[in-house]
Image (cartoon, rainbow, N blue to C red; front, side):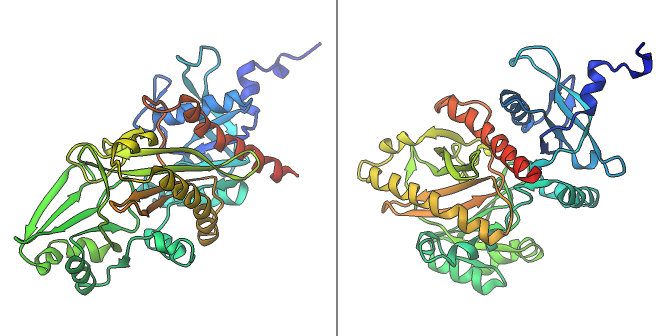
Length: 385
């Protein structure tokens, strides 16, 4: 006779299972639904894992119990269809492979988060951990003879002389915090006959404008900001525009199930009207690369596509070696000058993805969520071997 205490409900059995894939984030859940801008993306990862036959969970690193070696995470709730599926909390073993999707640098640097992350890095394989330092990325790319010619002139600001030199030489320059993300804290400075105009992108998503009649006035205005937190200054390349709106080309590079870098998506990110940054989180619009044909009839589109292909192949290995990190995806931002020349604007370790598309391919959107899971399965297999 089977004793009653040995009987486990299905939900109890589920609690004992070890998820093969974990997404480390800062989830907020209300009535079974992830909240915030990142919420739909977190849900898509769980759904994509289900399609691959993988038990996955989303968890906050501070929810890790280091004594029990377990985590309170969120998994897809049993039952329901993919459109109306919800999530539920579950007590689970720590996944052997973890995909770092913490998108707040401030939270990432908090003491409690740092402690748990250190523990997880000792007990699991974590990929795409942390953020890049913009100045380090520039240094890695400049060290490669094939890539340095594609970089806009960039310098680390150590005082007013460097900023003054750039402002005096280029009509427009961009000042960027080396640890910034999502366009926050970027300052655009434009020189005219009347003086200097600066526009700062604030954390609240607004544009703060300032005018000065001298470089000294500009530096005095932003001195505390620039010197308290390291910043770079970068030449403002005169880029082609689409309907009087600046844009860049985002290349989403991801490793596939074989661990090989592949281009998942290539598309234009067009800035919202009146904006100078193209980030989708700041109202930017994603458009098909075919839109390039509407930008400037003199552009040699086939040549530009070929350069994009070449750069997207060359950049990931250089970044991986320079960063000495395990990476599964990168977001590469490229600018197209009026001359048709391509510039490497930025490389991101946590590229923002959209869960749906209007102008693009829904299959490629699906693939962008599937590839991190397939790469994780490869890592899990290697770990067990």
